[in-house]
Length: 524
Ligand code: AHR
Image 1 (cartoon, rainbow, N blue to C red):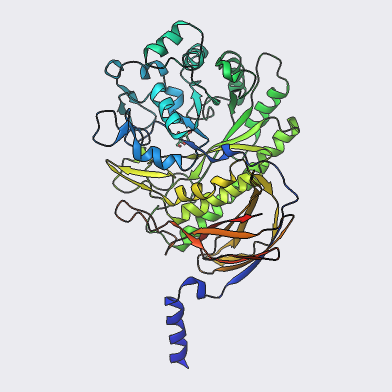
Image 2: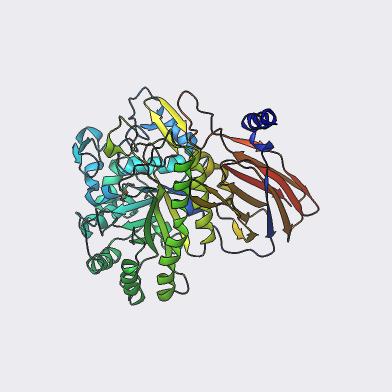
């Protein structure tokens, strides 16, 4: 008997996950009850002048041996094009409140070297400035989200920056832009008025910030003729990076009383997953299921965080005119050993991919208010899409999640009724399953299922009403372990694979692997 038990134990250890005892979950998806639009801008990214995010990650310079277009890496551009990145926030972050845009325009040789005192005091050549950022945005097919300097700049400096970027009139700044090789006015989709003004942006009180907000909103304008009546630039105010709501209260109360002279369209909030509190200590490689569980538990707080801020916004803005913009989110782990601690370098594992899908699902469930979000950050910094090392580049598990979610951009939220179930590991209880559904413009239904359980597969039985699904297909992202990563030498450890699904008589059935992210499409 003992031998038999030992044998069974050994078998369980070597059998693939799909043979382990599966749990089952029933999903009820009613495609005839669509909800809010899942704004494509919630799949936005953040590219700060920090560490190797811009320099090396994007910018290698026109003379580099790394293939580039006008100094911008070709491999990175190609990878990002596939994500249909809707907007990129730049130049910061904390860096934005010390950035003086004039230092980053004109002939490269004449740009001054400055110190990046926000991030390690390293020397900044200013080679990647406004025109290079706009070139990058155009190469990847995205929109600019520019943060202006409220902390150490002036409203005049910010207004002139916007004029440099957006005027089509023959002003001195237009001529300067043309002389720099850019006769056509740029479009700026979004304007961030300061960054974390309660901390690195100038340690302001909420009331002081509100007085600055009014001035910047009044005087900093986008004058691009194509952005006047439609596609207007949205102005985004600083909101909190903490669950307390007094800052939100102050900004929303002021907005409620605003007159013709100023306005905002969004309120920014920042919320990172930092599993063990500040400073970040969770390793980004070589961790186990306990760290995985703690991190996912911590990330799920995003839902409560948003509800708290939304309750205040609803009080002043029941029509939901002001968008909640989560323009910094992601998993912030300990710096990789041997790296500059100011460069915020971390690896990116299957755990981060699962965490990304949970957050994207939360944002989608809040789609009536959360209409924009920016993962921090795009390349080589915190929860990155892409890692580079000189000529080498690898895409991360988080990159694949963003790729799998492309069909959800601007799709209509469809409610999914399901019991998430739960599992218990190392003193932590987590939901076993999360799910999201949406209908795209062509009438296809897209379903995402995250299986958080690191050990057990889940049999999914989904009942689809409101559409007749003729066929289904899907793909799954999983890997051997929760800490599996893609590296320059093993880039395909965590990649999506096709999955077997069946759809018959309005029922979709499939089995999702442990610790996985799955996206399925149903053809009408
Ligand atoms: O993303 C890194 C930093 O985190 C940003 O510069 C800042 O806004 C936040 O505190």
